[in-house]
Image (cartoon, rainbow, N blue to C red):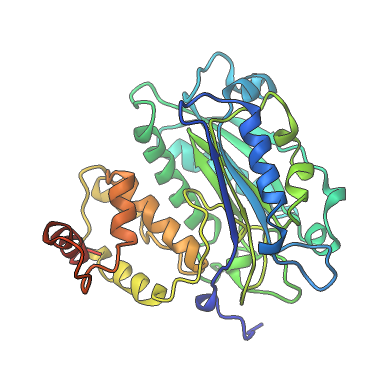
Length: 362
């Protein structure tokens, strides 16, 4: 059914917080403090007319090896820290989850990665409002072993990135954001708006797939994130950093998958130039080559930007694409979000030349 919903109008206006141990030491206090921050961001969080369902709340934390080595011991065996990756998945709640799991396992196998198994994420759905509970997806974690030929860190994450992008296109029957291909059923497991048929709100969604970080999020009120995900309540879950986000959907339709953080960033949204930014990204894809990805691998990850996502999600896509192709994080951020350099009389010539150079590529 054709509706008036238009994904390109999606913008966010939200609350953000972060906690970090600058010495890199991990503790549950970081997780606990971050959850306390987001619980104090109710003034920057939207909710529906009933007051029972939020626009979205989430947290990005490091993968806690101590926690998962105990709670997924049957899957991890003797694997050490960062010798495996974890995917956090929203699967359709209409019975299609098993097929989607098999597709992901096949994507891992096709990339030469060993899939270790699935863990059902323990949750307390009783804390949710009716609307969020009615459209709650099945939430699973998938574990993938690092191959011996692959280095720990970004090299392994790059392999996981290829798997995820390939899976996302398979899971939706085509490029993310397109209508599902014939024979691929739509589902409403990760979306929530009554009568909503947009594929962007009706597909399997990968919250994160990484050997370093994991994202827990959903359609919550600010206090529900802590009580919904039992993992976050465990004192054994430790991290050296945490990013939290409360979403205020200024002109968007809330859904489980549109909650933040995204895979790399939590962002306030309202990117006024997003359409032009995306058009330029899409226009250059035919000529892209990379020292980190072969042409065959590049074809699996393109298009880099999922145009069905919000403006913040598309920025996240772009930042991730640059980093997976070897661009350091600080440079990737400066390429994506340059200062207003052109008419700044106080900026030195060297810095202007830096931004001018990268502007020709971005």
